[in-house]
Image (cartoon, rainbow, N blue to C red):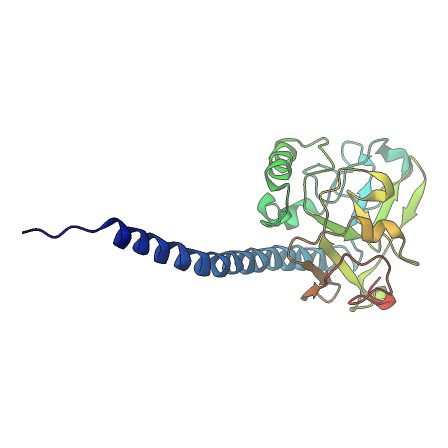
Length: 242
């Protein structure tokens, strides 16, 4: 005679499976979070190396985090004369013929942290930027970059030529960016310094219960924290980082 499960036995088996699932799912989520953080670190390291390699090709000068577009024939110049610039503002992460940094990180996947809460939206914007050589949207990367890079605009008149050797190796170059869609305080483009303003911290992303960051010597660090820091004196940060 073929023996079948009783209802109680079936319920016990289901209960055991549910308990095992409850035990395993948090571990699987932690493993997934760790893997995503590793991918993020890898992306940021490659971006940081790209910036450093850039300085080797441009006499030590750091690329522009924002610049005006350059007139035809002057796209390859990092700091063209004002008369050879056009009044719009491509960013460091845009596929724009005026963005000399673009060639150093072209795979747009490097601009994206897989843990970002609005990854799908940012990815679509990044793909849109990839197809454009004249402009693009600001919200197309999950990373924000230091304003210690160069800035070259005739409209308005901002002319800052920054060199790698003048920036301390312990300064932050790149950080995770928040999902805040506000442009106030330059949240889409750069974080500020000297002194660091509240805008630096409002735009800091915390997708890993902390933030990944690239320093100007090219290495990546993870800064864990229980709450989003509100100033440069709020641990784990210190004024020297900015």
